Structures are given as C-alpha cells and as structure tokens.
Length: 314
Image (cartoon, rainbow, N blue to C red; front, top):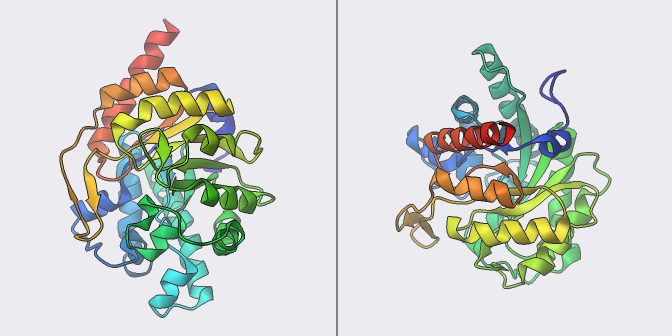
C-alpha cells in the first residue's frame, strides 16, 4: 500500500480507470544511461538506483497512477552471470519495489495527492536470455520447469510488498500457465499480460484460449496485452473482457519494431493517445504504454481518460 488512503488495486480498478506508466528503458535512455548490457535497465538497480527512482517519478508527475518496477529483466540467473550471489540478487529484486515506493513518496512531497500504486514486474523467461526470445516463446521447457524458474523471484518480489505483480510480456500460454501456478498462495494480486501478434500470442496460440487460463484465477485482477503494436490492442481488449469477465490491462509499444540482432528500434510510431478512449469503452481499466512510450504520451493518455470520465459523469 502506498498510504492509508490508498485502496487495494483491485478495488480501484472496479471503480474506474487507472493510468499506467510508460517505457522504463526509453526514459532511462533519454537521461543518458547506457542500456546495452544484457541486464538492460536492471543493471541500474546495482549501478545507478537513483536513476530508476527519477524515471518512476517522471511518470508519476506525468499522470501515471501505477508504476511498474525495473525488475522485468532482473533474475537470479542474470545477476549470477554478473558475479552477484543470491543474497545480493534478492536484495536488488526487493530494491526495485523500494525505488518505486520512494518515487511515490517524492511525488506526494511535490503535491501529488491521488493514490499511487506499485506493480512488481515479472518478465518472461526469454527476457533473461536477452536474445529477443520473449517475442517468440516456445523455449523448449516444460510448464514445471518454467514454474521453477519463476518461483524464487516471485517469492522475493511478493515479500517486498508491491500492490500487484505484473506478469508481463508473456509470449506463450504455457508460460502463462506456469506463472499462474506460481502466484497461488503468495498473497499478492497479479495481472497477466501477453505480448501478441494479431489475434494470437507470439507463440501462436489463439488469444481466447490464452486469456481463458486466467478466467478462474482468483489472484488475477486484470488480464490483457502489452509490448505489442497499438493496432493489435482493440480486438484483444474485447476478447479479454469477454472471455475472462475481468478488468483489462493494456500497454502497447509505440508501434516501432525491436530488432534483437541490432538491439535497436526501427520503423515509426503509430501510437496515439486518442486510441485509448476506444480501449476504455471495450473494457480496459488499466491503460499505459510500454517500450518507446514517453512521459509526454502518458500525460496525453491521462488527459484523454480524464476527459472521457468527465463526459461519462455528465
């Protein structure tokens, strides 16, 4: 909880629409930080934690209600490759939640009075590989093996006290099933968000089947998509809402394409804040941006959603 007046995130989603933050990596990159390391933004948990706090603060000040932590690519295996033992790695995972909390505290000190929440990012197995396989799935692992990979860091992140666990950029329904098994009993709600291409997961499963996995999961407070093209969102929102009956979470990329070989983005942005009114009408209740979506875009989203809410209340 971010304060005595902050309701549980599930309760807030039932009452209205919340604004998610945007891309952590592009905000850090714009501040001059090198993210070419295999740990990506997670490297700064050890090297420059203050930079992460500042990035979260920029999004809170831009209008975000929910910050997603910098733990997307933070894993015991990834930190071990950098020579960090398990105790140090666990400390950095917990720190990712603490840095977002600190940003919320600073935001309130600067006059922001609305409730602010923190969601601990849990990226897919492919993010640890740092080879673009989170956009493919099908790693050759069993559901049990994937659950064993995710369980230790999920336990650490849950113990750090976030308002939710963001099971995000999941490319494969098998990995979603592993994650859903693992969050049971942790005592922290979660959202499940797939990365998609058209009407299928990146691994090729129909979205109806993928979303249905979470329909009866009591721990899951929202289901949706992220790290995908904006033009793929509309149909996915409708499907997620219809199949699960849960609030929908959406935070697409800018529309540019990630070249894993070159480790760079190409193409042009197709994301516009005007798209979010339609997403909200279809059932989205947690809306923001992923890679290459800046604080300015989050402000525009907040403005559109605020205007939509004002119109609905007239």
